Image 1 (tube, one colour):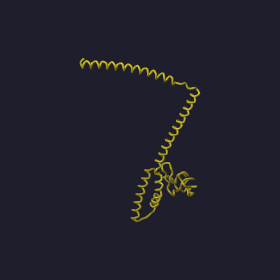
Image 2 (spheres, one colour):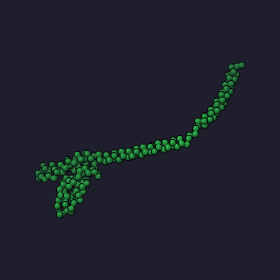
Image 3 (cartoon, one colour):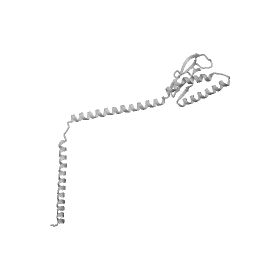
Image 4 (cartoon, helix red, strand yellow):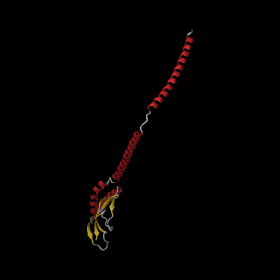
Length: 197
């Protein structure tokens, strides 16, 4: 037999062997799937009704715990966001409060009178600095509290004197002794005022 024929015969035998092996493997696969299904059916065990109820109750309790925890976390996030917003709105409060005495001193300096040219030049310079500073502070939320000829309000005014002026109604501010300031809706310093009886 020639070598070529031997190779052909060998290939044929090899193909047949592979075909038989594939068929057997497929048969084994089907057998194993059926075996698995049988094993799974055997593993299924009926749970008593009482135990099933306990498991359902426990699952409900765990879900309720989760929902409570989730609600608490959402409230915490909302609170933190709100506090952050408030802090951002009022972050300038400390600086503005510290600057108020300097504003008072400049205000007093501007109330002084003088005739000399040096004094008038100096006063004009102080006035320019005062106005620039006040504008910058107002840009950062500072507001002056209006007092003169307004009804006395203990939330924004501090009465230090009484007046009996017939030109004003009772309880009206007749004179502002020291300016008051607010930052948005928060009073930094109440205005010191004289109030009509």
